[in-house]
Image (tube, rainbow, N blue to C red; front, side):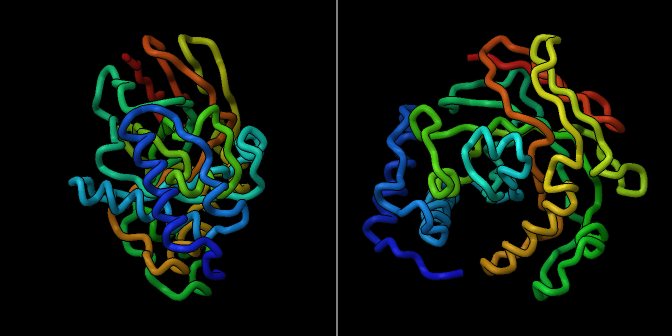
Length: 268
């Protein structure tokens, strides 16, 4: 990857802008005035700065998320390629009932297939094939990702969302996973309802053609960044349909074929 065109001061300013928005829950201006719209290296440097700040505050990395894997979400965000961010332990609200929205600014929800890795994917890039990543998966798990943007009105371009930890917020995963011998991720069918009304639908094939292909893409990127995927990591592979807004008091259910439905409620 080419080096960043932004200097250290610009990267620090973008990091501080997003960190302040996260802390105050007041959305900020986009950061593309500080890092250009095509400076991917600079955007990931900002992302790393944000993650390191949260790690210094006591959080730990528990996995990664892949964003903008479906055409529907790419159209919603106005981007044309996937990106990735980090999952931290304080983003996991799988056992909260109801889920507090106090840390969120402009949340949306999407349903996806997650993977728990059974072993490291720490090999040269050319060895990271679809078969290799399939063998690295311990189980597939139904998931809800609560995406969010620290940038006002979701006025983002690609480097804005990358810098903002791939517009991450919170996540929920089911209690029981399935080995890939029992489920084929690309064949699943998804329906997401809010208060029993269907608001989003899709299939496994909507996620880069196959959620396992999304995992392979991520593993390659992680290797290129020198931070490979590790055993035990949770990977959110990307939305199976459009993300949708929700509000406090809503009940959200993701029904993904092969898995038990995953239902959560939200409070202010």
